[in-house]
Image (cartoon, rainbow, N blue to C red; front, side, top):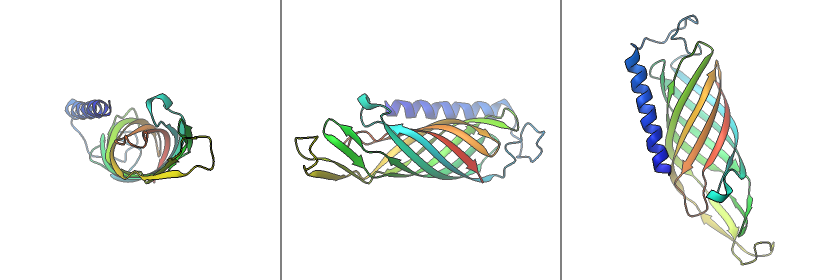
Amino acid sequence: MKKLLFTLSAFFIFQAAKAQNSSETLRPLTNDQNSLDFLQYRDRWNLKISAGLGATYRNEANFLKTSALSISAEPSYRLTNYIAVGLRGEYTFMRPYVSEVGRVKADPIGSLSATADIIKLWNHKYAPFIGIGAGFYRLGYGQFPAGQLPTSEQQPVVRKNLGTRFGVSPRIGINLQSFSISIEMNLIDEKVFYNRDYMTLKIGYTL
C-alpha cells in the first residue's frame, strides 16, 4: 500500500510539473504584486518554520488513535514560480498508548527529508501546493511490557532499538502570503515495533 501511494504521488507530481511547464513559458520571479507571477513576495531562497498536531497509528485497527506533535524547519529554493525543492528537518513527539500487551511508548522521531513542491498560483495572496518528501527517520527506542500480565505495573519491560528507517511524506496545502496550512502524512518502513506512520495538520511561517 505504501509503495502504491508513493508511486501514485510521484507520478501525479511529475505530471503536474510537466503540464505546468508546457502550458506556458515560465517567466522569472517578480516583485510586482500585480503580476500573475507574483508568489508571496519572496526570494528564491526561503526558510519555513512549522508546527503541527496530528495522530499516529501502530496497526490498522488503531488508525488515528495516538496524538502527535511535530515541529520542523525547511529551507527551500524556488526553481521557478511553480516548483520548489528543499530539505526538511522534523522532530515528532508521540503519546504512549495502551495495546493488548499493555502500555507501549517510544522515543520521539527525528527525520531528515528532501522535498519537492508544485505550486499553482491563484493570485498573489493564495497559492495552493502539492508535494512529497523522502528521507530517513530516526525512531530511537521503543518500550513495551515483557510479561504476560499487561495490567501489572510490576512486570519488567523490554526496550528495543528501532533504528533508522526510510520514509516518504506526501502533502497538500495552501500558502497564505507568509503563512501556510498543510496536511502531511509520513509513511515509515517499520513493521517490527508496531506501525510508526503519522499524519499532521501543520501551520508554517516563511521567514
